[in-house]
Length: 205
Image (cartoon, rainbow, N blue to C red; front, side, top):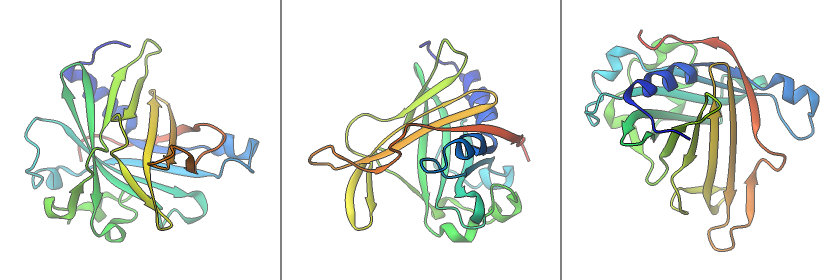
């Protein structure tokens, strides 16, 4: 792995910005992999102008993850802030307080125009640390430790997550573990989800 530079933030954001599908993986092994769609859209410039909490020149993205049969109702949304930090890129993860109000915004950015700083809640200890690899990809892992707390079905867990992105592909693996025993309690049991980029979204709109 090699140190990142400020120009790498732009490259990473460009590669992440798009509509991804794991159709090939899902059709090959449907018992283990549902057909998932991931869409990541740069926030409109008019919205970025109102996001005053960050001042270090990073890039803002809006992310949605949904089953293909109900793309109108994503099961995961987030606002991501990418910026250069010394020898790596950091991605700050933000929860949207009224997430359903912005459903569909990854494919229709006009739905994001009312988003403001007060609608975002930073997720403590849930940032990703991203580095370039010798395979011409970027690889990210959630910050070390058990601090990224996730509650599923009334049970507490911590997030263990990693991803790898290239110009045309995205691989991601999310798992929840019991904070006391480290037992795997939710998430993939068959390895990473493998996505192919079906469309790209421009960074400036």
